[in-house]
Length: 378
Image (cartoon, rainbow, N blue to C red; front, side):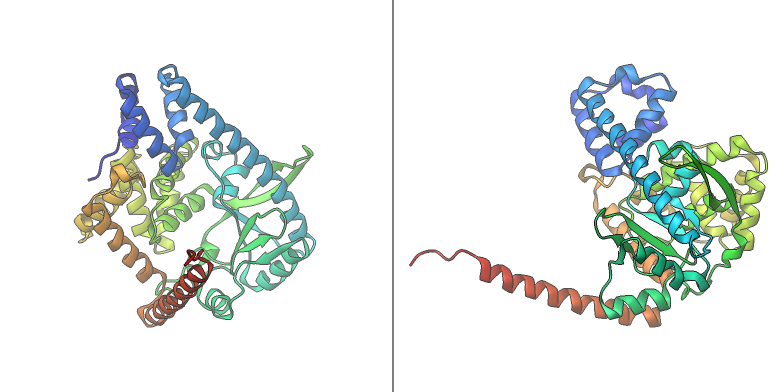
């Protein structure tokens, strides 16, 4: 298992009192690459240890807090625009991931950097939703015919749309996993709830997000079907914090979560989520979830291989945590993620085509760069 100073501190916060100058420098690098700066600060604040943070580090933390606060205002503004556009064409959208955490006022919304806004609509409403978003200035980021067909035929979403002036990116989903997978998800099993959310003008609007169990399982499925884990530790931290928050707010959370995983055939994603929040962050599990993990592990033949992969790559994406083991684990995770994403008969032609497209683009860039080089006087 790969250990990191950041993970050590999140497990043993009091270690902050003994950090040297070199260790603070290392920690700052790991915080930056992991996007876990405000998670770290929240953990130190919870343990009344913030007085041990040096002023130079605290100034960086303060800058991150201002950045998150600014992003929250931006997302608030975009949610109002998007929701109004969809309501005008009678589309009921469910907000996912970062936007949903903000709407539901979860603790992680105060720590998280937003990269885009994810919405889920009924598959029959996809075209109407896309037209409504185009009318308020969003345009598809994929202009290639192949990419457009690839997304619309095999994926769970249409190509990402970006606002032409504000740069905001919206992902419009009709499912939470690609529809070409061997075990497509029945999205109707993922229940939603309505949440009152304040607009920029302080008036309230009602927006839909997944229920707690559906939100948690979606986060687990999203992480453990990935092939790229550069933000894996941040996403696992989301799962750890959400688990504690949801478990503390309802005794039924654990049983509902397990039941949803069984109904949607996503027990493995839930097993990984619970196993690794416990192993990496020492997050205590309630009795129901601990029993689920123990029973699943007893029948799962690949626990050691999974531990090798995930315990190595669920670490800061930082040079100090790199090793040959981590690189090999990352390669295995990459292959696994692609095999989960689509069947081999579709995956191989897709990867071969992407390889030649990148090769051609690389040669074109090389030619352009050579033409642009300043030639020495002869």
